[in-house]
Length: 224
Image 1 (cartoon, rainbow, N blue to C red):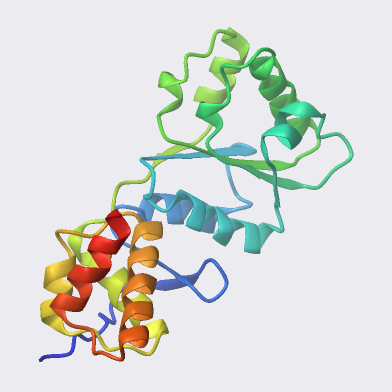
Image 2: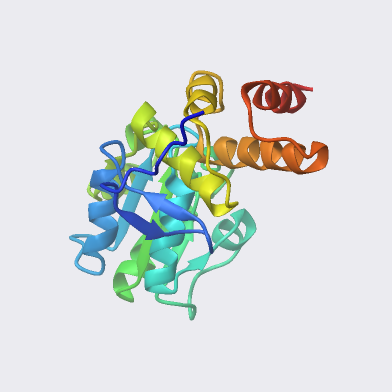
């Protein structure tokens, strides 16, 4: 079996603790905007893309740099931000805007943050034009912000993530197992992490090497 070597030409940046965020064509624009902070043309940056494209990972990168406070739904919509920190993160904003008073609260937060020279990173699954905003003032302000799409991982990035996850577990992945996993694995970063950990646990439990039959068994167990 031929071991797969981790490609060395992909930049690596720290994300969740011991995990790494790999930069590729699908997320380069978003990474560049994070690198530009605090030199943003607006106090709000919006990252959007399908689930699993890396928005949460990248928001953690910015949180490490900016010491931003990560807000949940109740904290963001349930109380004013007055008197708090200088940087904030709120994820999946497009899934929460349909509630009563939500647009008004987002508009208030936008204006208050601008007045206080504070920053806000919003993530969403869709472009703001699809949010169905009924307040013209909110729509015009949101659409004036930098809006950056993050694409799904291509095979090259996905392979690098899989190899890196196994390397973190001190496992050298055989090339034939990687080839087997690529068309079958959940293509989100979270899905890769879940699959790699399941394969590793199964290998340790059964005291077996990582092979295609073992990987197949692990994938089947994830579907149960």
